[in-house]
Amino acid sequence: MSDLTHLTIAEARAKLATKDFTALELTDAYLGAIDAANDTLNAYVAVTHEQARDMAKASDARRSAGETSALEGIPLGIKDLFATEGVHTQAASHILDGFKPRYESTVTANLWADGAVMLGKLNMDEFAMGSSNETSYYGPVKNPWRGQGSNTDLVPGGSSGGSAAAVAAWLCAGATATDTGGSIRQPAAFTGTVGIKPTYGRCSRWGTVAFASSLDQAGPIARDVRDAAILLKSMASVDPKDTTSVDLPVPDYEAALGQSVKGMKIGIPREYRLDGMPEDVEKLWSQGIAYLRDAGAEIVDISLPHTKYALPAYYIVAPAEASSNLARYDGVRYGLRVPGKDITDMYEQTRAAGFGREVKRRIMIGTYVLSAGYYDAYYVRAQKVRTLIKRDFETVFADGIDAILTPATPSSAFGIADQDMAADPVKMYLNDIFTVTVNMAGLPGIAVPAGLDAKGLPLGLQLIGKPFEEETLFRTAHVIEQAAGRFQPTKWW
Image (cartoon, rainbow, N blue to C red; front, side, top):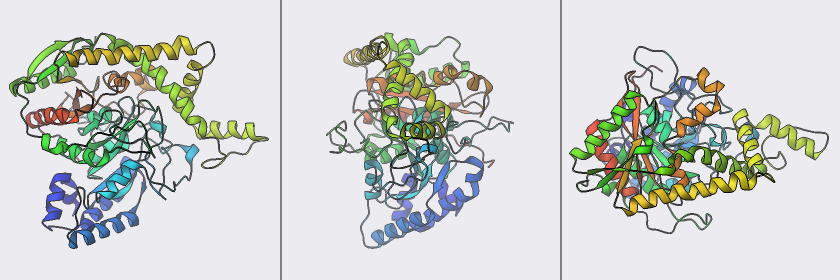
């Protein structure tokens, strides 16, 4: 029944309703696909076979009793950053070895309440720190896409690389992900999938391992815009356990699809036209503009003057918050413990063995910028820049712009263990150049596949919207998707 895994969530939901197959049959098809492919792709770090089947059986029983919910019987993959009760939750880090929480994250609890089935936990960059899924303690994830005529293994993007790869390779119907500086949108663009980072506060952060608390936001990665809308509707909620979650009604995002964009004003920021931008990316952006213009939208050139400061400011704010958040991992109550001659030595030995190189690098940067004598020079200044970035967007939206169209990434997926990237961490960080502004301003952003480059690899466009106007993004992204078509990898694994 492997063809069942190629159905979108909307298609599977419809066929489950007409009893073409059961939730258990659908779940078994996905588990079979995972067992056949995961040794090659490394998308899952834990597969919950029995729990998935139990959840599917319970879903079938509810359907027989006439009780169905929004995601009834739909099998999902869960990024290893979300706490899942009694199940491996380690943020793909050695320092959380063996940790199985006694509680459920709010986002996953919402999904289970809507009838979804958990297939397992998905690989990711350690503590969500990375743009290629190469910093994971469990090794890199392979992108299901390959260049035409090439056998080179490519990265799926990061940090939600396992989520994006699993969705693209038909190893789950959809996946949860998180985005701190582009970790949903960049992997979605690299794998030909759709990923949305909702407005900060739209989804609860409770029970999600923290990286940078003022930037982190959960969202879905899915095969198409409709599936992303279905998933976000279930994931989003206000939560008394997260005071940054916002008490606003969660709209029916799916209802926004198919609505006209005629008369909408789409902003094109001149600051996103980078020197040396690949011709394929420039061409794709122009094509996206044409799609929206043809659909009746008005295209307006805009300026976001502080964009050039976003990446350096982000790489001060995010590591500063990370150094604070990751101080809790000390080997005392849970996770890895490496013995030492006294408690201080135990802390040091545990952290030295438990954290990977990229995590250590960011903790050191963060601790440095928060230290006496440097706090004002770096952290306070970066927060001021962040305010200016936010003001740029507010000014543009106040002038009547409904959404902003940009490229999602500066290139298509690159090779695993790419020497240029490995030798220069800043070059890796530049992968987030189009995405970090959205996190700094707390805005919603969606990546939608819009074409292939000369190597036959997917490229995505990004739409940025006003706070809590995800419906506008879904509506506009759907127009691009309808014009560009959907993209699938050729199976080689």
